[in-house]
Length: 401
Image 1: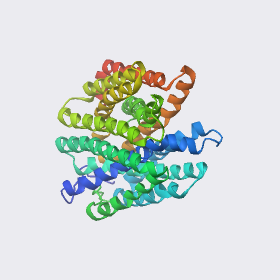
Image 2 (image 1 turned 30 degrees about the horizontal axis):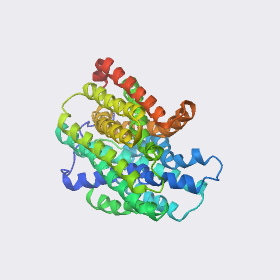
Image 3 (image 1 turned 45 degrees about the horizontal axis):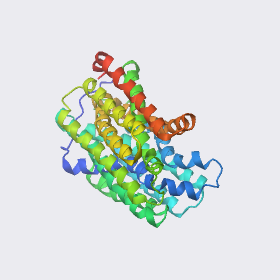
Image 4 (image 1 turned 60 degrees about the vertical axis):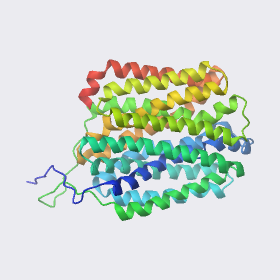
């Protein structure tokens, strides 16, 4: 009979040298969405004569999220069964190659094809990076600190790259895609500084099947995560169009980038807040996070002009920064080693499927209701429903956690 030692022993103690490459790698999926946000209006103008361009151009940002939703569970399976570090290095390298490809393309379908491949790489990167953070830092205090820093780092990086995307976008919409080469720069320290976590010791060579996932306890957190992905992402995708809708010209990428960067800074601030209040349960933090998102989106709806977009975007983004690490702790952090990769994959699948739905829902609502700001307000109403639901189901949430 095969015995399994449930303890996971780390041959080395992880520290800042391991945290930094993982935090940097975590930025790549976020950059995949925000980097080209300031130039979306330019891309829309460039492909205006292409059939269905009004739908296809926003999909340049949204399609990677769909691929993450579809492939993150498979990445989690590989991470649990084979090797986490190796998967991360390969994914970062391929990410850089396919990410930069649109810089030399002038075909909308070809660009969308590269974005599909980019999303597959992002699925592996985000799943493995989050899993390794939990692997390397098993004690609650350090783990929660680095998960909070993960949200802060990704949003601060997003702020920088939004600003950079807006600046270099003034030289043409192709230019920002060159920045995806950053994936190669991150793959090098990942390969040099990380190691494969030691797996549970088996006294015999027989293969032991992975334990079944607790679907009953995961169902509610994954549904809430899907809603959170949509409310988190809707402003990232639509902020440039909201700014242009106030009268700013599409060519003024500096202004568009500045507004998007301000929202990203607010998201980073939310991540810093989480680091201070991580001792509170997700049942207490999630209603606050969703509530801030709801208030901000309703402000965008009800307050006309650029001031409404800026003010509402800051409030909603503060909630988003608090929401992201809270969801990770709730769903992933407490899982045992043997299923942590798969649960991380499922969490990323739910979150990024919500992100994929965000532009589709926003576009559909804007068409039906006669304005994008109204559509954002409706998504804010959905965030409010999530806030009330998580508040009312706090007992079940505590049990699931």
